[in-house]
Length: 347
Image (cartoon, rainbow, N blue to C red; front, top):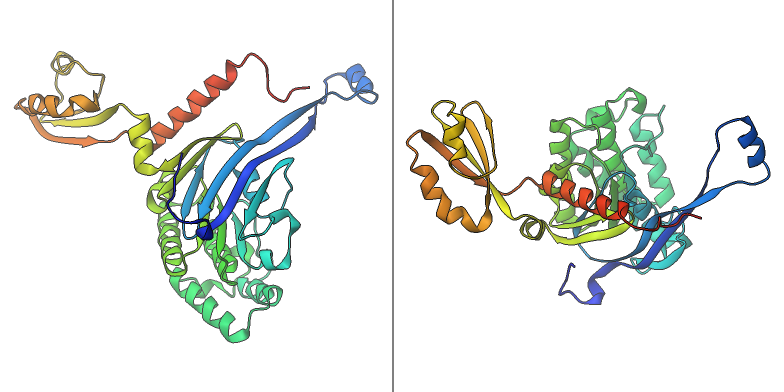
């Protein structure tokens, strides 16, 4: 688990045993089954979160990864006070989020990639003015912060256009500006780059890095894109089936969950299969490029042997891609859950 040397005074988020359950009703098929359902409804309890413990210190940029339904968005909704837990406790900036005190609401922001906070039919500039009134931002301070953020994202030309006329990437940039106008100390980002092209993703990465560095904002990011994690986060929390499977650094996740390296050989021309097979490792070949998977402990011994082949013109050694590691964790957790003898939460 993730250990930090900072004192509790640096702690911004403290979560203990946080659990969220939902009761869902099954709707049976067929006319008579539907009639019976009027008198007796069958239900199940779904656990979106299961006893989560987490500590986050001031200025951390934390990524929360997990498959669909893992509980990531539920976790952010709990920390932002949108919903209340079934059990457990949480404090953000010293506040219980679901008490929704005015002081707490002025100190955090939540951006959800699939939902808008800007008024759809109004220019973003009007929504910014509304935020100014809601958060009671002094006019000079508001103008300074707005202009700084708009300049960083280079979206000044978009302020007068109705939001519905903007592209997805343009809307997300303006959503981020709106979220940061009141200078929150904590920022929750729920898949902010979903559906964006590579250029828009890169722009938002640069913007978030700069804002986080300048303001020491504590950020929790949920995402499906490993590029977001590699570009922004030092700490990774992997969530599956409502529980934390891993909490640590990017470097540690590679060291802990992989046993081999990926070695790529570029030949002068496509080699015959028997030439590659004699290396004795799992391999894939695409034209003159061959990819081997070699045990980490054997790399130093094997590389000279590979380089001795006169047809090899280039060699690269890399860690297993982060996407592959995380996907493997998801599959392992899913397989373990499926072999459980008693389905959890079913009544």
